[in-house]
Image (cartoon, rainbow, N blue to C red; front, top):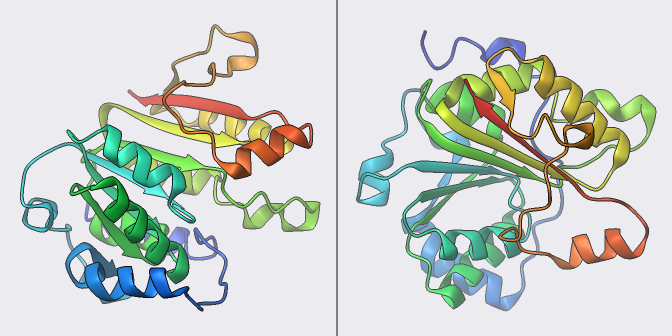
Length: 236
């Protein structure tokens, strides 16, 4: 199946919300210094498989993180997992500038970034069975009921993402919004190509992994009484 086949079914749901683009001095410097080498604009990518080996300069399992935000978790994980080619997808330009700045601080050499819609990237540029793993941490919860249809984790999207995972690769999700966590669990459990690695745990929730950094965002969620849920689903 060509990598673009599922795209028409998913264009109504995108992986981001548009925000302002003003960057700090440090973010702009990091952008000017590193973006030409480490970044790509998703809209400029031609249809067809992304040349991962050429871009990273090596062959290694590809970890995709959708929605890297300000890069706090992303840079730390990439630094801790040098054996992976780490690809971050984010639309927010200042966030990407901050991510590049954090990668400079952590001396990360194994991360690349795409600015744009993860749905388009998956549909047009990521072949089936090619990802070594995927992560979606704290996506926009769209808490109002009338906006739930805008949430990223929907059946069509999970079906697409699962098809891009290699057999045995893991989709890791995390959220602090109870209703969205329930939706994630329901959607992923209903996808026949995925298996819950922690199905025997209460509610099917995974224990919080020690290696996932605790960000300021997560600290705030905990202080406000919201329980953070982690989900691990393996591609069958």
